[in-house]
Amino acid sequence: MSKKRKSYSADFKAKLVLEVLEGEKTINEIASKYEVLPTSLKQWKKQFLENMSLAFDKSTVVKEYKDRIEILQKDKDNMAKKVGELTLERDFAVEKLHSLASSKERKL
Image (tube, rainbow, N blue to C red; front, side, top):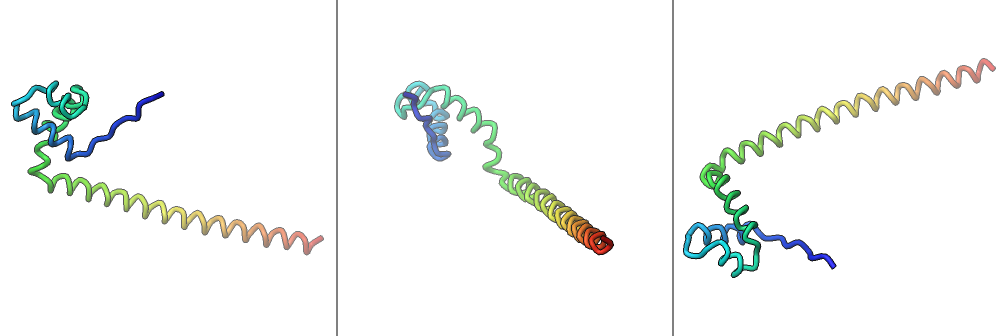
């Protein structure tokens, strides 16, 4: 029987990381108290410290997100345009085939 992997909210992780950073208890004590693995706490702390500047510079994150959306929108528009062109070409080719087939039938 396999154990189901636990998933923790960002708020829960932040609460535990802040408790670790306070330094009043060891990582092992906090992990035991909240029934999480000490390695998870260490990873969350590392991730928090690497990304803490984002809390003060939200505009950069939002700008990157908006830029990415703009790029994806342009890609989508280009693909829609190409699909339209290919559909027109296909419709033209199908119509041409029908007219050639009907002209051959007339000759017979």
